[in-house]
Image 1: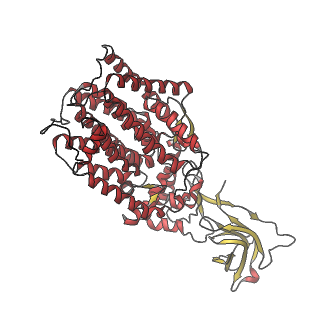
Image 2 (image 1 turned 135 degrees about the vertical axis):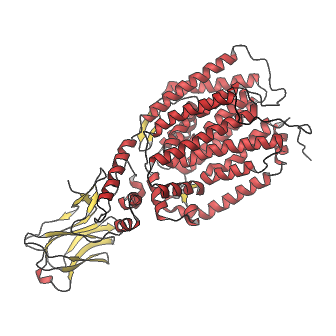
Length: 605
């Protein structure tokens, strides 16, 4: 069976350019106001968690294929990693630069959404309502304020709006056949959710730009030149992801825990998305390092669902194809947001369903589908099922105003959960300490958990997190520290201070002045960076000692000490049980080992 495009021959609609005019002016004013509020949120945020891992990895790598195609916690995002590398090369840990780029991308996404609305519906004032629903959407604010999430979420929103706008232009004018494909590729480069962009294009175009039955419109749409290229792009992306997924290492996805899935789905689809879509959640709780989690009250959840149900019912009563818009939205939220979140994140606790970043992209779809359900697209025939009551437009305007007010309340409440100043103070102190003391022996210790959480292992050590703040030589010395009589570590405030303790400390010489030669201390270690042997000793002459742990030896030349003894530190990355300290060569008869410690070095109190 041959499926024909049901539009009349020569069917063409003149699309409005961005240009000027009252609708464009009002739309840009809405965008500017929303960006001002978002900028105030960014002013209270700062680098945290994965941000440090990204900057550290960029500092260790060139702009290589291996670096760009590395999978990070399930994300395949060469475009995002390119942006991290470039910004880190220009100014590592510059929140002003990161904020500027983030706001610029958000501005581009907002303006592109205005372009999309005007291409779909023409130059009519009512497009300002769905524009406001998107640009003020609280769902998108937490994702934008955490750089690691913004790297995926904001470019994806831009690509989604751009691809749809490009396809609408091509469908109606025949111009820009490959532009939607380029936008899709850009979306995939920044977020794995970019693979859903072609399906959104297909759903929207067939439902509202085609004619007749939706199924026939889908088949007609697929006959357009260019869909084979979208399919090839999806296939290539999938193959490349599968080939590179092992590069995730310890961050590889392990699959969801069945007992967590119901809770994640209930929170994400039952509370977080519906309340956020209509201006909530109003209240945030469960504050984490990256900000608050959606914590709407029960009455807010009920009211949100009631409002969404009312919108669906009213639009379906008065608009013939409104149900198609709501079907597209429901399919996207479930397939593109809920399913990936469950697969990748339902592993530790069900509160991930309260993180709005997992449905931030759905804000674009909600605003778009609301517009498609309520407004006839340009050139659409028989769009109205029955005449709308005279008071409905006024009610819609009031609802839009109420949405904006609720959204601003939610945005400000979220901003109150951010603790960027605490991280900023730490990083500023570390930057200053490294600049003032470039030649110190700096030993590793983990940064505080409000910067990088403990489950990131050795990647949260100061040599990795703070290394980008200094020159390559100092960074290498931090990663491979030398034995020292006076090493330094970063304290919890970000300042370099002398090492003051290493635990456990074996300092009771039972019945003797010195430990016997070859004594073995009850030490067990998993190995790796950040561990150190501390030796309290006396010696009239310099000696060379060897610290053996699990067959791994680390040697150090110890200086002569005054009569009351000295203290020396030897970094040791060996794994095993039983630490033995021996003297290599001359000077054994003058060497007295008074105490030994092995563990993580801590700052002087």
